[in-house]
Amino acid sequence: MASINMQQCFVRNEQLKHYPTITIDSIPSKFQLIISSTSNMFGKCLFVLIMFILNLVHGRAIMYSSLDSVFTLKIKSFLFFLIGNWMFITFYFRYNHKLIKQIDEHLKGLQIDFDYETRKYFWTRTTLYRWFIRAYYIFSFIIRYCYELYTWSVKDRSKLSSEVAFKRSIIFYFLLFICAPVAYFKHFCQIYIEVDLPILAQTAVQFNLIKLKKLLNETTKDEKSLNLNAIKNIRHKYLLSCRLVDQINEVMSPALFFLFTNFIINTCNLSYTLLYTEQSYMSKCYNLIQNSFSLVGALLSTYSSIKIHDQSLESLATVYKLSLKTNSIRTLNEISLFLNHKEMGFTLGGMFMLTTSSLSTLFSIFITIVFALPTFAS
Image (cartoon, rainbow, N blue to C red; front, side):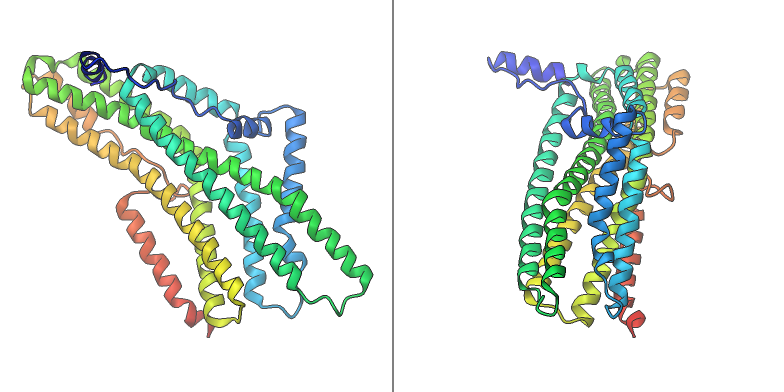
């Protein structure tokens, strides 16, 4: 398919757009590898320092919770504190130099860089998703800072002594302008990688799908083009793609679990505060905007993950169509081995594979929880 497109461009005297080799190497990835579990002593110490700063930021809500505050808000702050720690610690052990080396080996085995259409598929989607993540974090950063500064400016500190008020001001500005940017950058790097990895898995499956569709088109014109070696070669590439997806799933499976958990906690808290607590108009708007950002991020990651499973099903459907083009027993046996291969995709915390049907079930459970909140509250 790539060669046909290139020939057409040459005939029209056009120049193909250059797409670089497929890689997830980026500044966030390099930074994460520096503080990964396989880094040197400097990287490990830097990770401990960053975790300490992150805990200062996440623990701020717990530190400032008073004894007469709403109990559910304490639970929410404590849950975010736990999720924030487990999310980064899990990523620290899963995303490291060993994983990157294994991914590179699988990519070399696939020889994925030699296909123009595959490189185009990867970079068009990667560029779009990366642009969205940058915009997402810039807007989130601006809105969060504006809200924090506004709430701090209108906060009543008349009952506090000047010394206590001064100390709290020092702590607030230290967390806001020193610790919070570090936390945002760490969050940004991790989400950046968690966006790149599913696209890389999609690209590997798409590479096989392109090869299968090309073989199906050639078989339609000439049935002799369908032979045992062609099927064996594509099945071998499909197996390598499956191993690559499984390797990436070691990182994405817990990441997706934390993403969904965070979104459910945010939504439940938003529903509860809107229904049962009094808030200012500014606080309501801020919570709605932040929850909308969380929803968009969850939908983006979910779509990107489910796409891998859909592509694998499309590949198997194409293989089945190929079985109708031959009467060779050996070729049909090879196709049968291909069709008996396990499903490909990401799992949600290792519990079940993330597919369209499982997502609809998960969404139904989530809606039930939201509507059951009034019962729990009463």
